[in-house]
Length: 552
Image (cartoon, rainbow, N blue to C red; front, side, top):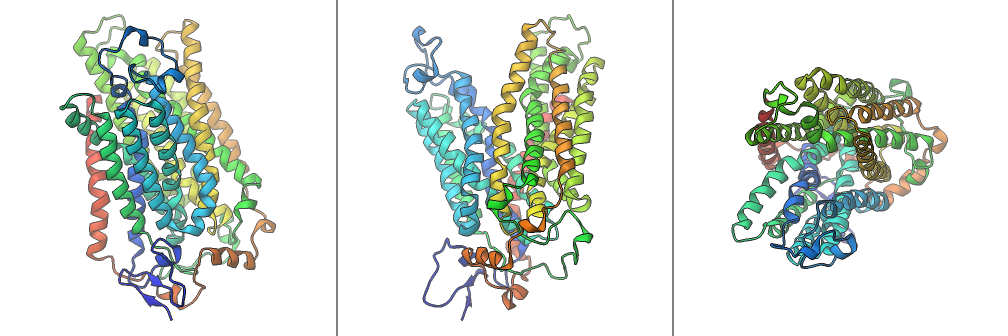
């Protein structure tokens, strides 16, 4: 006989007693409410989303050594890895970002299939140890001034935590919300976009506090935030529950036939088959091209606004006027306000577009991304030439909402095309597109900008060609999306293969447990969980809006 634990999870009886982290020990019981699952996902994604806020550490990290000797000039990367007497350069420390974005895609691809069988609790806790622990190791690297240790900790170990933490909630959320796949994954991935809104101000506050004792405060800030993130992510992971096989929301019935929505499959495709299909690589191309174009704006937004509009941002209409120190500071503050708006639209756009995809379909949502994106990218140079800073900022905000929306919508797109049984593992493989875009995109953009500056192009015109090229990339993405078709039934797993996969996950068979599971009330526990993730997010939102006010 099976019993019910006090927290609402089913406890398997018999001679075998599953461990606390085992997937079968997280199967929801009757008192659980599915609306608690997004809060667990947000707890993880709001922490790993600090990846977008790591830029606050770059400059302080280059000033760790006071009065560095003149011999440190032109220090190469290999010497920088182990020096304890010379400061690092900004390019040398920013490699950390590239490393953990690369490791995000690699780890998600390698361990995605394992995660499906291990369950979100175990995977989430490992992600917490890797991301939080990686920041702690990185902090020790800064403290001992060992750049290789920073790379190993915040870069490699933190990147593994990024990959596992990013995909941990996806499969679980999609199975809990078959009626609202886009909205469910949008909630979680919105947290990744919003993590920097919370983490970056917290990092600045902590650095100011620890710097009062001397130094930059970076080391202790990384260690402190690493400890906080480990605890918060572990709490989110422990809060996960998975639905028993065959569970569905009360009163909801799946479409009866393929004709009801031709793009939503009623079968399941195995990971080993999915990545060999043209559909997988077309969607890979869709994500890669959308991310590459979005990275162009993220990496160029602040300098682009300053170069294109300059003194016009503070009311100076003469393009040849020499700005005072206070006017230059006001221009920089306005550009920083744009960065705040980017964080806001990158985050909120994830929930908006993913939720909209439940209404209009995933393929049509990506059509919106590419068609609107092409228009916005082509208009940006025009707004610059006309001096219309307001329209320029609005266009960038729309672009960044679609950049975030692309990340949030793609898990539901994969579930529609390949089924839900192995969608987490398939999503992990697909995230290699993000890794490729994160590594290739900035290199292309920087090379284009440098080539045009060397050719004598004026700074306020140097971005035009780059933006038109990004519009061309979006057109290629539009073609990829147009070619996506439903997977042929010959690629679907048989009933026996599906049951075997479920047995590896220790899923209960369809039966009474599925009918009675997760029918509990939202209650005070639900309110507290949503406050726990909602209050920090709203504080971050307020800070982002306060920064954006400098634009107006």
